[in-house]
Figure 1: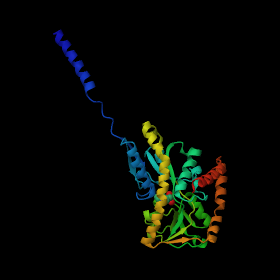
Figure 2: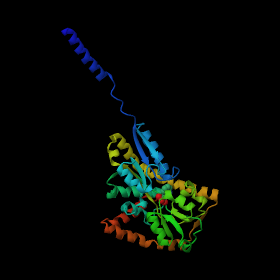
Figure 3: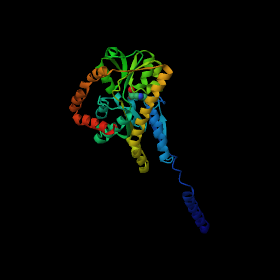
Figure 4: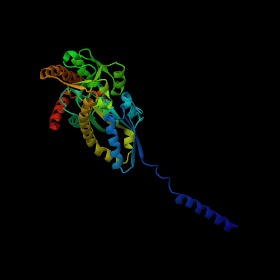
Length: 340
Ligand code: 3IO
């Protein structure tokens, strides 16, 4: 009897050990999934760069990471992109910093009229500026990359050929670009790009002031048959990640993300510049859009009206204890460095 009991006991222990060792530990659940939110429609450049980044990340991490993309404000919209990422409603988010000028003072200095010639240069300048100053505004996120649009032009349903034509015209813009419209005497209406198609359609505005690849991507050429080439200021963008999500990534994945940040800025700038040309050709061909070039005399008048903007920004930024003059000098020096 005793012997049988002992055998039973040994059997039990053996069984338990067998289960313990024999059953494979639960498979570590699939790849790392990250949700990436974006505010405008899928065909627009912020979403094109998002898909490019997703594809590269998935390739370079050999499938260890999967990026789920949410264009069109389906996860977070323009206004709550930054806070939504901080709160963890999305792991990653793409935001236009011009929509919150007071929040991103340093990086929005790139949308002062300082002569950024294109998105390739603008994106490199912005990314360098961010890395030099590491503004406090980004303390609660991990910044993955930054980039800019091409310089802004006036897209409108009525032709704007001289400074009198723009007076009182209802035009949509945000941030630095909005300050410029005001200086020219337009009736500036503020809203994110994602709200603009409806505002144009309903006649709330007669046009907008932004980079002109949207003539094609949002089909604005249908309503805006005129583009006045001012080539003034860019809109700055940032791609940010929730800090907890970032900290939970394995080191090799973090390295892939960090290794892509400068490359992604440059890729997006170059994509934008090429896409502007494509959009111009398309707008002429599909809608016979007229591109209006200011005379040298007009251009000088328009530019002169913008001079107080930078001085005012410097004064305001100094009140916030920022090295405002150095920031402006740095932007101009970086433009020189990258503009070939
Ligand atoms: C922009 C924003 C979303 C989609 C396409 C775009 N092209 C230029 C911009 C710049 C911008 O944020 C704006 O509001 O004009």
